Image 1: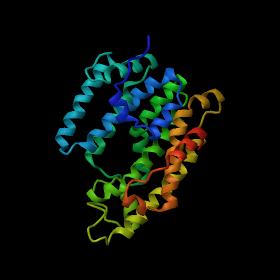
Image 2: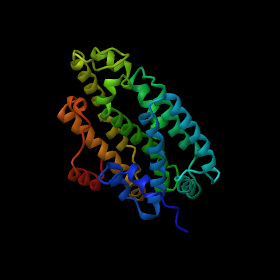
Image 3: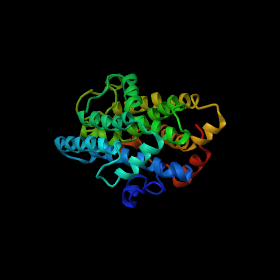
Image 4: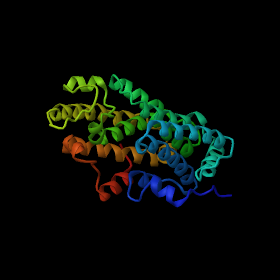
Length: 283
């Protein structure tokens, strides 16, 4: 019996046509695409809560509801339109509940707004929480936990790149998660809005963004060295490798064009370049 389908509107919100996630999911075999879509949709719904909810108390209430709903999903039930597809993925692919709860933990940390002291601390947090969806995806693709280390390294590099891409917006509202150590080294106040109305802090902020990009860049090649040597496993993991390669290409574009582009607006890759990078699928 085929796995329950994810509602079209939810899937379109999770992986819009032409997005990096859309290209990566298209590389997955059809029988594995639905559990991957369920993992991605769950992650998208949870990550959206702290970013789209104005009142922190309301966001926390939503996350509490999702914790209760996840408990029901892990038991094979649930009320949300995503419940049946995710419950099927949990059952069929033996997905650990702890990894799904890590996605909720990440959203809680985002709401807390605690800025890490060092890049090492920030990286450790992304490995623990933000990399969980990639670990789940790797389990679906290879059928076991043999690629956990590879997925964790990729997931951390992806999460850090995704965070860097949003720093222009974050700097205006004081919710940037750039490490305090990085900010201090560039001469930026470690608390409050990083981008002042008079623009006096802009040069220092650009130095901080450039330093952050430089710290993230080697993580992709380091992750690539952790790829499985078994050819069958490497082929199976092509969707997650391609997803990471798209973020690596984005980071290289940020470095090429300079961090000022992050302040002007979110930087993207052209559709043609996305197709090429995803198809090539190499770090």
